[in-house]
Length: 222
Image (tube, rainbow, N blue to C red; front, side, top):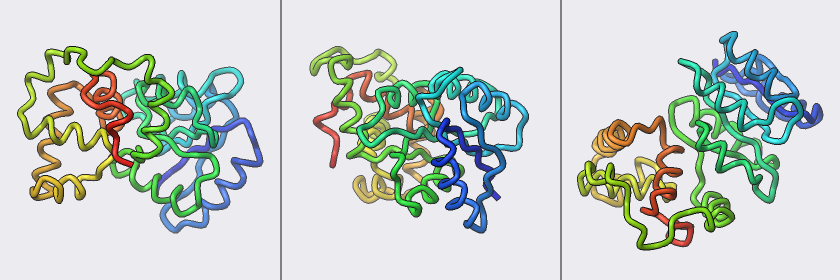
């Protein structure tokens, strides 16, 4: 059973998500709160696997709450909830340790799929959504031609390929097909990328690739 906490200051939205999720045979909403500070307290008590986190809330916003939750050892994974126009805080939340982001009007089936993905250790970073989000931050990202971080020199050519494709939103299966590799081999390469760059998950791979200039918003696949 995947134990979910809903964090949003809109009770009606929480009620809608709760109804959808509690109808699933392997998902249970075990807590719901209206601000980030309360979310941190509940998360510290254990018993939560995945947090659906709004960003704009009273007391403590979702970015700071995400940072505190993910800083704790064995803390639950966090999915950020954004508005239709993509919240300005979403990119910062990924840097803080969120495993991805969802639009608040996400179809129920996509919501359930995203929770399963995050719970299994994957990230929810759709390439088209990522591109639109990162284009809003393009002014803060390195310009083409900017020198790469020296740590990238520690990656093999294949590991760099995997890094770029992960940043463009491809799944392990899609990367395997693209590079003509076994999916298990892709997982091995990705594990080495994470270890060498000191990253936690695929979401942070995306952030790193864009911040280093290895991938730019306009080079992302649709």
